[in-house]
Length: 278
Image 1 (cartoon, rainbow, N blue to C red):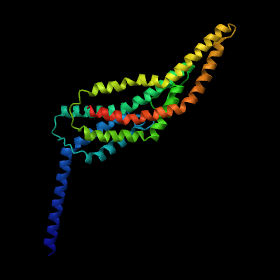
Image 2: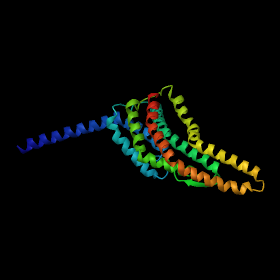
Image 3: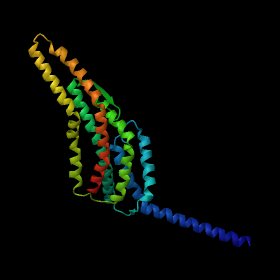
Image 4: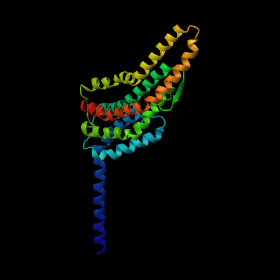
């Protein structure tokens, strides 16, 4: 009885191993390239998105997050890409997926660039044009007030679950745009560049109150120099500009927090519009 039972158990084990081997072979044949495409899309997001692509996150950690996240997302993607797909097509699909992730990340980055531009304009207006600090994320010298406004926006972005919004948008894109997509919609590029073009206009809108107020201060100083010629306007003007500018900065902080919150809320809708055009 032992020999037949052992033989049957051995046969069942071999059958199971054969099934597992076939399953692994099938997964490699149909899903490995799917994982590569998800990996490339996540790489695009993590390369250009604020915080996710920042230099303060070690490269090794970012790579590990991208690899693990793409592997966890793979079972939820029903697309099949066979290993026999021509190499040229595979490379092109990787490029398309990287572009999709990059576009999602850049849309969020545009918001921070606009805020930083507003801070730079503000700094120049009050006389902080030469006061620069090192931005640890971009590893560049930027104006002091630009960095301060950037940090304010960054705080709101984290509190409002901005990174989660971006990851959710990328997950949504996997359902809206298959990973084996070879072409993007014709309206994608115009829509994307339209959003990129809003950096300057949004930055000017944020900085306009300061620009207008400092113009008034400059006019007052000009009138004072005419009324009191003995007044050294250069000695008085710079400290006065800085004092008035910092007071205005403190007064406008609640307003800016409201504006930044609204802008962060628009990021998700802008990404949805962009994905619908792809």
